[in-house]
Each structure stands twice: as structure tokens, then as C-alpha cells.
Image 1 (cartoon, rainbow, N blue to C red):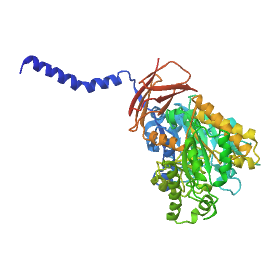
Image 2 (image 1 turned 180 degrees about the horizontal axis):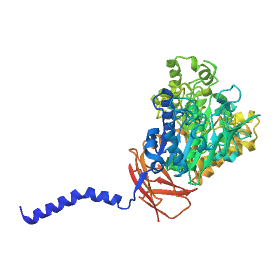
Image 3 (image 1 turned 180 degrees about the vertical axis):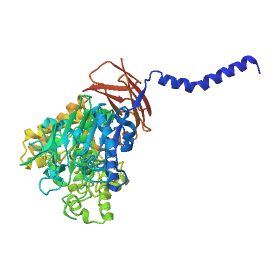
Image 4 (image 1 turned 120 degrees about the vertical axis):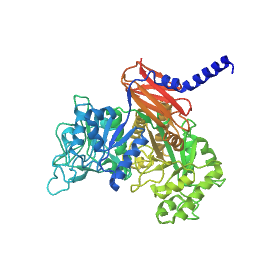
Length: 611
């Protein structure tokens, strides 16, 4: 072989074999020693059925809210020590029941983590209340750290826990802790749709030197429910006197979600994958058309311009010719050219058409629990077929008449291609995968809980309940602002109406939401549009590394593309940062930097560095 040709081949081989090394060096040349950002989720009991369930709901919520976490054991803590724990974890979550028994050395590490090393810990309900033999500790090992003596001996012969209320020190404090507008009654007590004030389990407790954020009180007691105690190290211990996971299992999602979000965002400032498109707030306006009784109201709404292209709705219809029983002719009759069909053909231009139960609204609502599953499925199929025949579009949304939603329906709806549904449980919260009796049917179909105003949800309920128009307007304005500020999604629902009260409420909601959408603060869309995003967002694999200089290195990957996926990292008040990576929109607000990917590439590497 010619010597010059031989040398050339060797040079080419050297160049190509060195490319991976060169690329790696280019990717790491500017990187500083750093650690992956994670939350420690402490679980002493992972084996019992109760332990598995409680741990599973905390993991579910952390995944849905986009927080990076790792499950750790008390033994892991002992091996790390307080300083090692701080190096590895941005925050430590100590859920109820699975940590009631705790070794003394694990409790000692948590104390050191907070007091000496500036760690942030969330203590929930009963941590370290028992020794390893399950005998009660007279004083829980973490009570002094919390500044609260919880699980105190009960007055008289009562149980160590009782049912009481959850009251915030002010309405602003409730809002700060993620409680949606409308979920607090006038005394700042947490309430729920149709029930009014709701009760939660509390232990008997005495506040020593913590700041009280929420409480329960009676004639002879004042019991702390949420407290915080701050330390000179920068550490904080937040104590929550409620079994949050237990309520998540019973279809009260907001209690756990609001506490986790507030602690991890406001206290620990943990980076997260924001679970809303473009990292903005989201509003779903869901309209239920149950029968032919709404034709006049629909005409009035159309004439008054309340169906708008810039406010796309989720419009759910019971499509059959009857409502209460076969042959009553009180239904919407979606396929009849003299009744529902021309109306439906217009409505489909203003949002997404969904199915409201099965064929006969009231009959289906009142009899669903008595029907064989096969018969109920037939009613649902008839409704879907009628709507799809008229619109020529696949039905992807569902709402249950009368809130009647047995567990089997989730799986069946998913088979039909539904990705989202209205939900009367978990009121006031974000889209989620609900738990019924501790179980949920699917991770691909999203429930959209209603956002109530006290015990009312629809506008006509508020009118009948004596709520003033001014109150409703203020609530709607507050709710839209809340979704924008929290960058979360909420759903409002009602029925068509020609009453001035309801028409004004609809107009107020649409005007406020459209204005904030024009300002770039929120997005208004049908629930199926948000569900498409949430399913795609859930496929994102990502990692954040925190740099010693205060910057971040972020890697994201999604097989369906990263467009509109948003990462939030905390940078404080400083404007002196540089974002490397391209194709990213950045917004800084309240110390958080929101980075939204603007291209649909499957992989993305970003760096946030001090200038």
C-alpha cells in the first residue's frame, strides 16, 4: 500500500474513533461538580398493604406534579448522616403510617439534617410516634424538631385522634397553601362540593414554639393542623396534623396535592416538570346538556355571543330522545334534524363534543348502579354512536350524570378512546388519576375535578343557594388568577341557562379567561386537549443537576417530542444568568425561571448559568 495513502487512512481512523471522546469533553467541559436534584421519600414500612398504598399515592402525586424523588429507608438515612442527607436530597418527605415506627438514629439524622445543615422536612401526622416494637413513644422523637407535641394523650377517655376541621389563619394563607378559591368558607374552613365544611382526622397536639398556619378549635381546645418551625441554618420543619395519603385514597386529592406543592415549591424550592402546557395556567369550561329542556337556553346563549371561538368549551351531551323513561320524548335527540342535530352541528364549532352518560340522562343516573355492566355499556355506546354520527368526530370526553361513576367505567371509556372525564370527587383539585377504594383503573385517562364555590358547583346551584352575582364574579376572577399564579389546571362546569344570573356568570368567566389568555398567562381548552398534553408530559424522562455556582444542567427526553414541556428552576431575584441550548422560551416570576421547549425535538440539553 502507498505510504501516503496508509497515513491518510490512519488519520481518518484516529479522527473517527476520537469523536465520541471529543463530544463527551465538549458536553462536560463547562460542567462543575454537581449532584442530581432529588427529593427523599422516607418509607420505613414498605411491606404491609397499608404501607404499599400510602407510599403509592405519594409517588403518584410526585409524578403527576413533576417532582424528582427517590424512596429511601431509615437505614439509608443512618448511613448518610445529616450532612450527607443534605448533599443528596433537596427535601425530605416523611409520610404518615409508614414512618410511625422509627429508629432513634434515623430521627437523629433528620434532626441534624434540618437544624445543622439547612434541610427542609415535611412531617406528616404520626412520624416517630412508636418505637421499633410498635410501643407508643411518650413524646414522638421528632416533636421537638417540629415545635409541636403531637399525638398527645387524649382528654378523658377519648381516642388519640378525632375528627375536626381544617381552618387557615387567613384566606390569603389558604391561597398561599394551594387551596383553590371557593374551597374555604367564610371562617377560612376547608369545605367541599355539596357537603359544606368537611372534617379531617387530627391527633391531639400542643404547639410549643412553631408558627401556626392552620388549626382546629373548639370550646376547650386549639389544635395545630399545619405548622412551620424555622432554624438559623436555613432549615425548616413543617408539620401537618392530618393523614394526607389516607384522604387521597378516599377521593380527596387536594389535601395531599396542595401540601406537597406548597412545601416543595415555596419551602424547598425543588425544580419540577410543570404539569401544564407551556407552563401556563389552564381553564376548562365544561357545559352539560342533559336533555331537550335546554334548547331555549342554548338559543339565548348563541344570540348573546356566549359561544366563542377564543373560548373553546368541553360540551357534553346526553344524546337520546328520552330523559326519564323510554318514550317520554324529553331528550336532546341528537340525530333528529328537527331537534338536536342542527344545534349539535353548530355547537361542534365551539369546542369538543363529549358524551354525558348513557342515552337517557336521568334514567341512566338513577339506575346505573342497578344495571348489569353489559346493559350500562350499551347505553353509553348508543350515546357515543349518535354524537359521532352527527359530528363525524371521535368522542374523547365523558361526564357522568349525577356524579355516578363506578370504577369499571374508567377502563371501558379508555377502550372507547376517551382520555378525559368530568369528576365530582377530588373537588377543587387538578386533573388526576382518582382512587376509588384505594384503586384506580388507568394511568392514561384523566379525571378533571369540578371547582366548587363552597357547597355549590354549577351556576344555577349558586343562584338557588342565594349567592350574589358579585360573589360569583369575584370567585371566577380569583380562580382564573389562581390558575395563572399556580400554573395549574382547573375546571368549571355548569348547564346552559337563559337566567340573567347564569348568563352574567358565563360572560364573566369567558371575559376574564380570554383576557388572561391574551396576556399569555393561561390557556383555555377542552379537557381532552389538556389530557393529550398530560399523557405526553408523563412520558418525559428528565434530570436536573444543580451546580455549585447556583446554575443548573438539564437534560430532557420524550419519544413524542418536547414542544411546550416546561421545567421550572429557582434562581432567586438575580437576572444575571445565561441559558444555553436554544429553542427555549424563558419567563422569570417570583424567583422561578420557567423554561419552555419551543421545538418538538425528542431530546434537549439546557444549561442555566450565572453570567
